[in-house]
Image 1: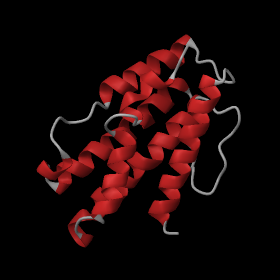
Image 2: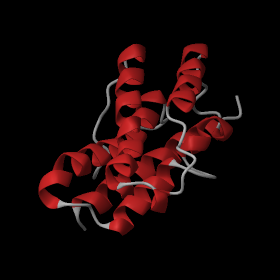
Image 3: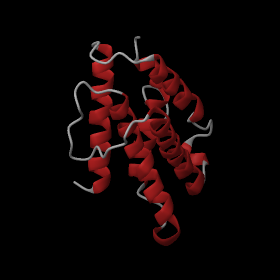
Image 4: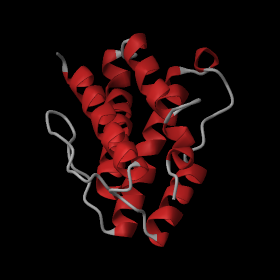
Length: 149
C-alpha cells in the first residue's frame, strides 16, 4: 500500500472514530470546539465548479486550503496535529483527532501542489478520492451535520 492509500485509510479511520464517539456521547464538544467547527466549515467551503472544470493548480488548491484552515484551528485551540497513517485513533476521539484526520488529506494536497511543476499532475483517481473526502454530500464539507450536540 502506497503513502497516499495509507494516508486516506488513516484519515477515514480517524474521521469515523470522531463521528462515532460524538454520536455515541463519548465526546461532547465544548462551546469553543463548536465555534471552531463552525469556523472550519465556513472557511473551507468547496468551489461551485465541478472538478473537471478546474485547472490542476486550482483543483489542488481546494484541497490545500483545508490544510491551512486546520493548522489555524489547531493552533487556536491548542490541539496538536498528529499523523494518522498506521496509527489507531485515540478513544474517545475528540477535536485533535478530528483536525488530524482532515489535515492528513489537506497535507497530501500540499505534497501534490509542491511536486506539480516537476512531476506534473498526481494520479486522477487519488485526487478524486481526496476531493470525495473533503467535498460534497457526506464529506467533511458537511462537518456540522455529523454532530448531534
